[in-house]
Image (cartoon, rainbow, N blue to C red; front, side, top):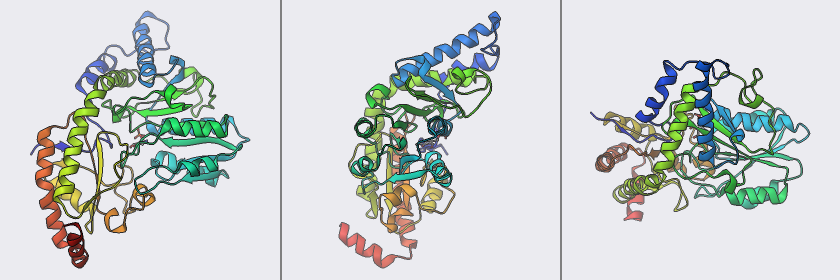
Length: 397
Ligand code: PLP
């Protein structure tokens, strides 16, 4: 049975070219890049080159604005804590109700530490309430943290507009953007975005797990989370993870070359899958309307059936998809993102995210399109909500 991997928002396959770029630094080139002998020059040079690649990936002004981290969660924590610890007098912070747990749970911790926290809501299409955001920004707002695209629905937030709103209300408020789910899918341009800090994670764009990056513009000062050596200009101590840094830089180069493919081929396959399911399954509904979304993601609610059962049936056929985010699946709590969007209770538990990548083929999508209606029909026949399903069928016919 072949594997059909449609869970690329959870993690991606490492590109063999990335492995190839990393290999020398996992084997012969093991020197510490801070050492001064000749042997260390190649490691040192590799890290410098990678920083340059990441600068271009972010369209930053300067290599000094790039910090290597271990993952997207670390980038977010470093950005938010780093700014707050630099501005201890400011006690108000803003985020959205649909952030990844690495931001949401940090904000909940900040609330317990006495910060005033505002969580901005979204409408039923997953779009952010910009008027509410504007209303909440005050002289005391230290940082606003808003994701670029949502990991569950793929909905893209209008980052440029958001930064204009923030800066027009308070020039000193810092703006952190969690760009983990857009990297490799749409271009990232920190200058156009007007963001002060932007985080990414290598394993979402075909680098290995355990490496990330944070862009911090030159006007933003950070208190480091990890104190020690002088690495990363004193902003993150610890010997640089040379092979993974090199791997992420290679993945960033490849991702940039692939952006057009994402916008055309990956989007075409996603749209085909989505349209096919919505046409052939009467109790399917798209979670998120026809709004700006990353090209690889669709989130579909199957009414009156259990998402976990759908996933198990798909898994039996070698198809990998997910319900909610990888960090929250496994818990029985319905998705906080879909709840914030007011997705009907009847669909929230049966919601499935399919996320494609450059490795997804037409054959993969055709196979899922073929199998999905019979899986759903089987589970629908077992549902205890037969009257409701009959009424829904009549309504949608
Ligand atoms: N932010 C978003 C939007 C994500 O989807 C994820 C992971 O799924 C993260 C942050 C965390 O990234 P990492 O797993 O690299 O810590």
